[in-house]
Image 1 (cartoon, rainbow, N blue to C red):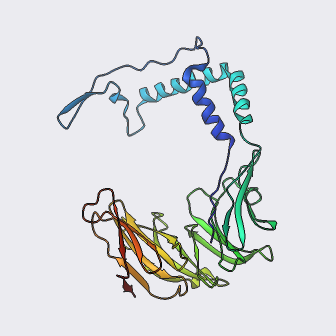
Image 2 (tube, one colour; image 1 turned 90 degrees about the vertical axis):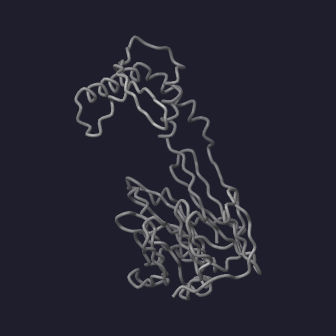
Image 3 (tube, helix red, strand yellow; image 1 turned 135 degrees about the vertical axis):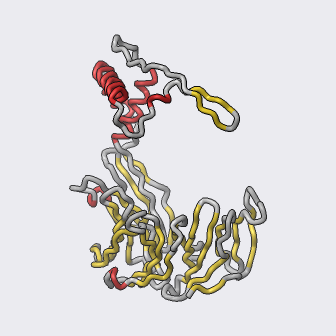
Length: 333
């Protein structure tokens, strides 16, 4: 299994950097006078300390104060005039920064199974192209082609099946991080009919490459709170729900053990966590609970073969500690 990460260089980042450089004072000031807001001292008291805020009057949660609106409009007008006066500098600096972008960049090649996996992006591209190589380079996915004609596009969670024949990946077309999972037959270079919508992009394969396990999001909160198993070649409506989290303070995410034997189901909030195991060889089987959640206890685990290693803040271990255990799991029906 190999997971890719998108590397993308966009002109908008250069524009942001450009504005920062210009506004930092590297270009001479002009006669354009900036607005000067009035000061009205306002005392704020907290923890026995008094702080004076001269601009507290500018807070307007209703967004309806006409005096404030007029002031912000004058700020915008000031910036527009200043920007227009220095348009030549902007173009010069923009072009200079653009020259610093390498004509092509490639990620480190990672060996997994029979192939080396990597991605590559060119200076004039918005997205990466993903490859694998076993004597001959093979294109897995060109995100630039997939993005054509779309106002927004993001790809994530690229994952190769254990038999090395299938690629699963997630696509987001709205920016809401509601991904659609697609499966590509790499030998035939075509998409399967499987389409799994409104989910997390990070799906994990079963050992036999016949199933995938994925996290589904709540349609209102977008919190990941359900785990499903999908059989390749079937409709999403037939997927089996194997876990549902009812406490909306917790979020669910998936990862795979380094031994490739287990799928970890992490259920977490800021100060508490819980981990369940699913055997990759039996994705429709029972889950196993590692350790029940409790307040102020965070932990994660890793399969070491005969033992499991746990990183935990148990017993007031503020900087965490490593614990070694055999098996201390319970079944989830």
